[in-house]
Image (tube, rainbow, N blue to C red; front, top):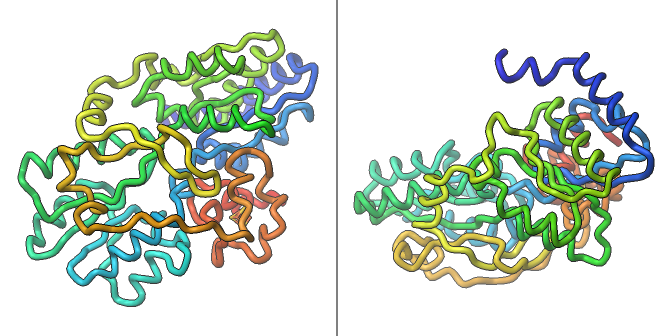
Length: 361
Ligand code: SF4
């Protein structure tokens, strides 16, 4: 299959692996940001191919995993209102809040619907003018253009019974938060190719320079990741710290300006709480005041309540690369995909789910 098979070729993987072995002279810790990349690494057994000096740790780039408990609780409260049809991507439905998940609310009769796009939710709103349709807008810069487009269209077409519960997060402030922490052990990053397809990688250049950390924009197939690791290791071994683009077949330095304009039209940057990590300044998006009619929290006057995380779940350490999923005492015991204690075990992009699914223990 074009753009798939050629990035899974075993001979090419062996060649890249040999190059990495030849280059490495000392221990290095590299973090891949995106949960999709984590799944490829674990599923393909890439870590087993690498020299023992390289440690891969898994980052916070799983949107479901970093959506705070308080936001799930708000989603459940909205979903239980009789006038509301609550629409969400499927991944969010099983994520536990402090008392219930959206799926629990659905089992009790709430009108919770799984959609594949915010535009599906907008269509449901148009088909149900006597109901209120709320879409759960979670994700990184990748989902922001589509969500912005849905709100923009709702405004243009005057769809007043549509709104969004927004929990958008941004990658560069999260990288800075990880690097600023005294316990940080990450020495290089593989940045997420799809985020950079939208946003480009200009924002990463000052970070690489300030923290003296190599950042390689990387794709999602096994060869993409091996090549990204090879490029990161080459920088580490030679003392360079710049942004390089492994995923050039999709990413340009300036990104997709049209998508960025749509995001800026509808959203503005705000501080945001990350599940398991806490508040990171200027790390999220919220609807601009001129789109407040479509802001579910304002429309339904939802109080902002801070809810503590379960102390049994170590997701905060996993998401900052300080703990591998299988090192969590609950992994595979009290915490399984069937009975998850935390979001990284629920999400299809969660690191704990990857380790459980592909037998890393
Ligand atoms: S294994 Fe479960 S309890 Fe442990 S960090 Fe992952 S999600 Fe949380």
